[in-house]
Length: 242
Image 1 (tube, rainbow, N blue to C red):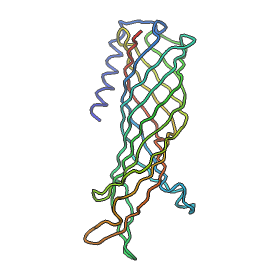
Image 2: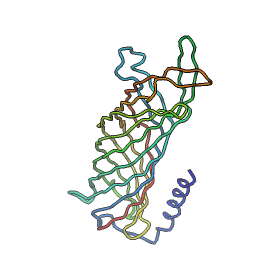
Image 3: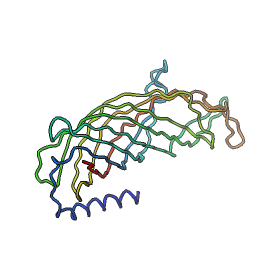
Image 4: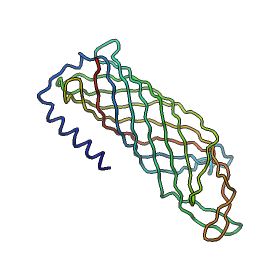
């Protein structure tokens, strides 16, 4: 969190410093963009193919997490249109999830850790809005992506093992801005909205677990659908190679 605040403060300071630069965005055709981001939430559809409608519509909500990413963008057709290819690694780990375990008529409520991560490959276009100043560029964009990831549930240091992962496909929209802080270098902020999801088939390696000296049965199969569907906000640096 301290690193994120430091980067945001650096971005604000660099915007003030950049007043002496007045580049023209139309001069540049290709940029490479590293970024860090925060995803506000994720959700897990615990049993999407259950015959029971209550189980089928049961979701576990997770708190937010962070990610790092890299994108490439290339101008096409006009000076204000860019094609963008991007990827990232995003991870959310929530220690406040609970579950009931059973031993006959006896039940115990245990805390567990849900961890999900995702690596997408996204392709889209960004359109630069009319400029108020050469230093500032505001844009809108959208596209589609393939989403690959995993989910791990951990109870008393026993974690699920993954046997199959299905790649998901979905659309996204975004908005953002970038501000030149030097020759060929700009700092930016971006918000992305998407409903990225993928399926994971996992299970515990054991059929039971010991809690306070009592053995409780563990559900063996977890065929779940993971949605990294929270708002993604990020800061980035754009280096225009040419």
